Image (cartoon, rainbow, N blue to C red; front, side, top):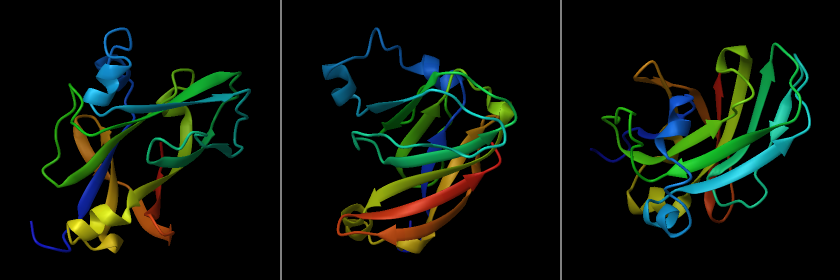
Length: 171
């Protein structure tokens, strides 16, 4: 791959992913071995046609924030945000260079009820520099119906350690 080519960070949000990693089997030491980092965000309610924001508090994943709108109201629930350094079982690998696979899972909210969403994620400046990639060519993809779909992605800001990106999708 030539310098400056698009590097894909892949977002996995299909419900099947939740069953790929069985929390009863892969826990503690095993999650470190498999490169899985997990954060949970509790919410009290989601109001239809209103923007809902969720940010992990521990900062251990590269997901900084997720915002979305739904068609319906939802009571209390949980959003799981996870990142992987490997291709999860049951997911077709990309033919592009992948920094990390990200998963956003919300079991109480059907994916077809989400009107729109925005994911803010980060990529270490050191990783982009070490691999001599162009930071403006990072793209987030969504895994849907056994294929990878580009999301509208743009570089939003930087700090001393990370590039921060926004990505929009209709679900």
